[in-house]
Length: 154
Image (cartoon, rainbow, N blue to C red):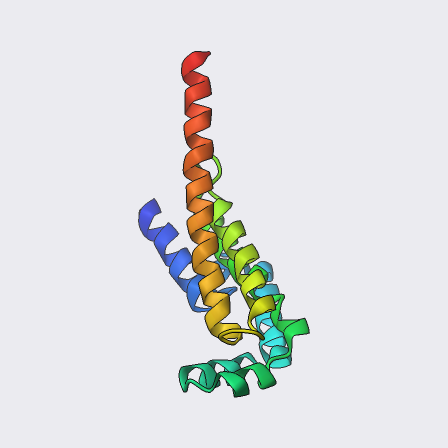
C-alpha cells in the first residue's frame, strides 16, 4: 500500500475510534491503551447518553447527564489518538504538523468547560474543535512562512 493510502487509513480509523489507527499501524499496545481510555472516559462521562440527548436537541438533559470531570479528558485522548496514528503511518513530517491536532484538543476542552452555559458538551466541544483546528492551521501556516523567510535570508 502506498504512503498516502496508509496515512489516510490510519487517520480515518482513528477518527472512527481512538486506538483503531494504532492497530492499523501494528502498534497494538498503544491501540489497546487508547481503546481502554476511550471506553473508561466514555462510560464515566456518559458520552453516549450525551450524544443521544444532543442529537435530540435536549440540551438541558445533555448538561444534566454530563460528568465534566471525566469528559474534559476526552478531546485530548481523541486528538492524540488521531495524531499518533497519523504520525506513525508516515504523515505529519512537515514542521508544525501537530498544531491543528494540539490546538483542536485544547479548544475542544475549553468548549467542554463552557458547555454548561451554552450548547451542551457535544456541540460546544465540536465548536471548540473546529476553532482549534482553524487556529492550529493558521499558526502552522504562519510559523512555516516565518521559517521559510528565515531560510531565504540565510
